Amino acid sequence: MTAADAVRDQEQRLRAILDTAVEGIITIDERGTIESFNPASERVFGYQAKEVIGKNVKVLMATPHHEQHDGYLANYRHSGHAKIIGIGRETFARKKDGTLFPIDLSVSEVKLSDRRIFTGFIRDITERKRLEKEILEISEREQRRIGQDLHDGLCQHLAGIEMLSQVLAKKLIPKSKATAARATEIAKAVRDAISQTRLLARGLSPVTLESEGLMSALAELALNMEKMFKVECVFDCDNVVKFEDHAAATHLFRIAQEAASNAIKHGQAKRITVSLHEEAAHIRVSVSDDGIGFPKNFSGGTGMGLRIMQTRTNMIGGTLTIERRPRGGTLVSCLVLKNR
Ligand SMILES: Nc1ncnc2c1ncn2[C@@H]1O[C@H](COP(=O)(O)OP(=O)(O)OP(=O)(O)O)[C@@H](O)[C@H]1O
Ligand SMILES: [Mg+2]
Picture (cartoon, helix red, strand yellow):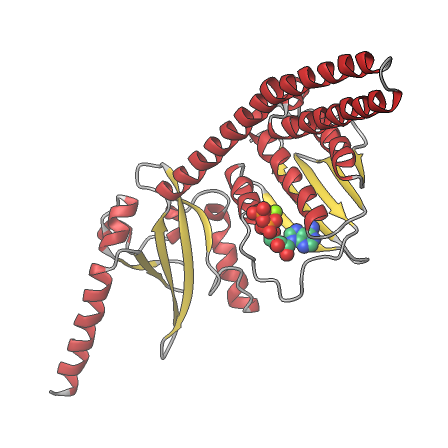
């Protein structure tokens, strides 16, 4: 095989890989001009390769990346600092007909002899996102149902037992004061069980969230945490914060609830602060604890809590941060636009 044949053979192999790949693969030059656009990209974006080759890659992007991408490239050319190369992220892309859709994007840099190009690998994750949303909705519905069943079923049942024990205690007084006292103790134990079940039911089905909004629901969450787990849990909020978006409020409430329960379960916290603040056009819900903090070299763990927090945050277009507090403990915080 001559050298020219070998080069042609190599090119054909590469072309075959690009043509048959399931992922969209797009290459751009240092200025963002599209140089290649494989068939999977054509299917995902609805453009023919010839329609976009030579155009700036930002035509495929949604706000804010559409407006800022030239800046990202310029910044990378000058500083060498990349936010995406080699990392990958979930973001939104724009089809030819203008619809936005969620993608998994990873970008790598290829150094050629005289210049460099960037390769983007794109996977349409619309279906995965739809399923994630559906699972969360189902879980929300189930939690509410269990909460209501506990409240209307078990609580009523226990209330009946409490009554019976009180009647029994009264009847026993003439026979034996000591036995009557035992029956009163049983009635008291049942009353405690009712309070605990009510707290559990309200956690599962936070009615306050619907009737009085996020601010009251978070205040109640803090109160219930104190009662249920015997820790100090304060609610911190300087002004009245009104947040009308009920779906987003539910996600924020569940994020705070999971963070607070993690603070107790894993952090062994003694004091937890749940806070709600307005920051210009955003609102921030945070949960901080004074516990032992995340384990060293933490790599995600097997639990669902943190992952669901991230999914909820993505669903409301927010930003989730989890950090170690300077004086120990953990701070979980979710920032979301007030008017989405
Ligand atoms: N406030 C915290 N303090 C210390 N460690 C934490 C805290 N929050 C989370 N972690 C660590 O992160 C891990 C993962 O938490 P995550 O909520 O995802 O799962 P989990 O609580 O173990 O299970 P699940 O939430 O599914 O019931 C925990 O096992 C723990 O090691
Ligand atoms: Mg958890």
